[in-house]
Structures are given as structure tokens and as C-alpha cells.
Image 1 (cartoon, one colour):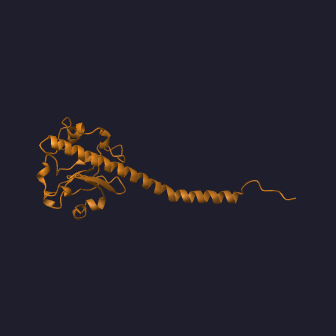
Image 2 (tube, rainbow, N blue to C red):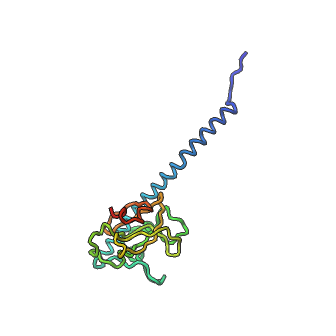
Image 3 (cartoon, one colour):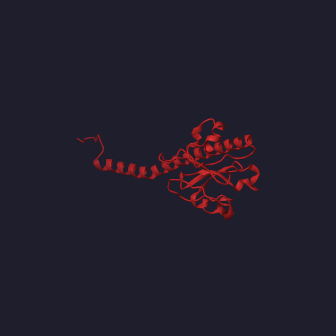
Amino acid sequence: MSRRRSGFTLIELLVVIAIIAILASILFPVFARAREKARQSACLANVKQILLALDMYAQDYDETYPPGYTPFQDEPNWRDFVAPYMKNKQILVCPSQKKDRPASYGLTYAVQKKSIGSWDDPSSVVAIGESVGFQEKYWGVLPLSADPATSSNAYIDPRHNSGLNIGFADGHAKWRAKDATENPDIIWE
């Protein structure tokens, strides 16, 4: 009389577990990159909304952008000036920002207190970018113009897949790789 097998052998179970482990090791990094890509898209939307708020502020104040940082902490900075033009201040926080960083986005020196008509080509002037606070570790310098004589520093934080979202004075925003932000010829395409 033959007995019918009612379960799995140990070898069969180990093979199934090994296959599941291999699939998990392949898929988890893919899921992590997809999640970061979604955060990158949300951050890009934040940058666009901030650019709109900056433009609305400028329209109300003789087509001039707000001042950036002040040397005194009790004085308002650019975020305080554009806050009335935002429905939700949560757009000032990048979804991928580390909790110990003081700010998500920084207004570049190229646009602070400048008139909208100050530039020949506003599509090449970086207005805002993902940045770190001035006491944080600097990851790189975001060039503000193709001309080094008129360039100034904005400290960048490449949070999204080794890159960051930046917004330009004409209102468009793009993701750029960290390496591309250090080469003006690539940023100003």
C-alpha cells in the first residue's frame, strides 16, 4: 500500500525561501528608487508652487523679489514675505528632507531684491533650489550664471537620486544631477 505525501520536504521549503529572498533582494531597491522618484516629483511640484508665490509677491512689490536671509534671526526672511501667497506652508518642506536640516529650499543671491526685468535671459537664472542651512555640511555650489564674475553661492543638497530640484526666474523648474549643477554649461541648456 502506498502512502500519499501530505506536506513539503525540507529541501522544497528551502528552495522556496531562497527564491523569495532572491526576488526580495532584487525588488526592494527598485521599490526604494520608485518611492524616491515619487518624492522627487512632489518636491518639484513644491518648487513650482514656491516660484508662483515668488512671482505673485514680485507683482505686488514693483516686480521685485523679496530679500533673502537677514543677519538677525528676529527679522523676516524670504519665506515670511511669500507666506501670504501660499495656501499651505507645507510646500516649504521637501518630502525627502532629513529632519535635522533647518530648511528645504533656498532663495539664491541672484534674485534677492532684484527686479524681474534685471536679466536678459531669466530662464538661465536660478531662483530657488534645494539647499542646506548655512551651518550644515555644504554639498556643492550651485552656479547662478554662466559668467563666473556674476555667480554667487547657494549651498545645495542633492536629496533625490543624487540630484536636486531647482527653479528658475522665468518660472520653470527642473531636476538636475549634482554633477550637472557644478557645470554651468550643462545647467543652462
